Length: 276
Length: 320
Image 1 (cartoon, each protein chain N blue to C red):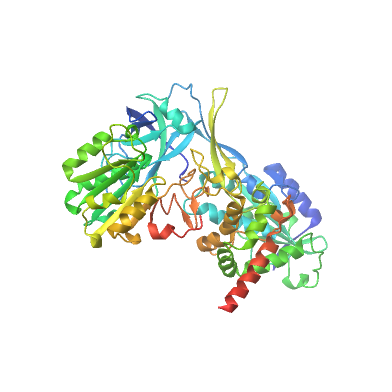
Image 2: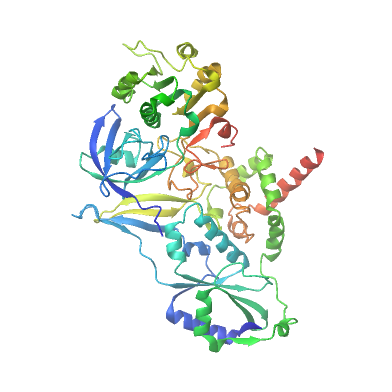
């Protein structure tokens, strides 16, 4: 009998401070030396999550941000928020931690191919979007125009700056906004309707993918709706309390769905009418 | 032919079982039998942070010795079968079945059945001091074979007239509840429809949000996973019963809760039992045992709630 709760040991191979509260962790499997690949020949589907932690401190869900083609390591962004993340922040290169997963469905890789895509994310919601961008880059000829709209609270809290810079080389246009005006910031403030002008897509053949906190709804109303992307083509990654990750503990349910098994990525119109 | 046992032999048989296995008579337990498979708190993993061998220090909870669970009644046997099904899907729950596979479950019932509703052996009272024995799987047949001196085979007809028992406490309530549960599709539709019904506001006033109903329910299976760093050299991960009516249940790091009010949490409890369970498994996650009603400190009776909803739902549907 397989033990669905048994984590695997992984070793931290890189730690990078992204902001005052967020660190990026790269970790590699110890045995065997590479992560297993799935039916798509990926180590995870962008949008899937892993549970990372340590016995004694707990586990928390993270969407890997590294390329899903990379089997030697995965990368996650960890914001210091609770017991698990505080513990992770105390670690150094070479330390061992545990991992379970990947779990969940991820973004619909077949459906999005051949289409223009608008990715909208905010705050610490960028990792799954970053992994999706990596997937697009690897299969660039199969995709149309790609936009990444990323909202951070302050300029200091913009994550993955270097990666976003690199993405330009692959024709991926990123628009970064911050929540409130800040000294020295010349970019846009908030997900405002004006941004629609900067996006050129064929709305009949476009999809949107979203992951992030509250202001996302603003983006939906002010950007995606005006762009003409229908709700059936908007894929949202949901956040819920997550514990077991495997459809048992009941923490993550919303309506009839388990965010951990049926999600975390849902059609927008699938979850819009849920009572909770 | 049928296998029977008299009460004197049953006592001796039980003594024999006690010699061989750990034995738990659940009839006077306050907490439901699920605790033997899915304990209120179970240390599922431990590790020694001081251990030199970094990769192999993780220890998984040990498999218990074989044990007998004795005295499950009809709703409890049904609940066990249903809980097995729940724990099986979508992936086998390791720790539940680690315990479950070590168990020999013995039912003790005083009602008629056509087939075994669950468990390994059932003693069905068929007259004064006399029990019909149900045992269908290899495990139970083996036990009976080893103890065959206590059992006797008789003709089927002999018991026909020997049945008259008193109804146990709460039996009427259970009977009505089981009638409602028989149409679980209707229950699912009605409870789904009832979101926004004023009854949930009334219940939110009444419910203390203590979670007792979920702890005493044989089918509720919410849990949380909690880790602990000990003062000794042991770090552990525990699986603990949790309750969806408690405020912390859907609260995430940073403090946001997805169901901040009792009203939302209490409805979610009903929604899971009667709507989502029906859509997932084709039946309500309730066997009509009455434990929630009996133990609720606020005196909430789920049958009354369901009746009110069903009545209003019927009215609305007939107006359409």
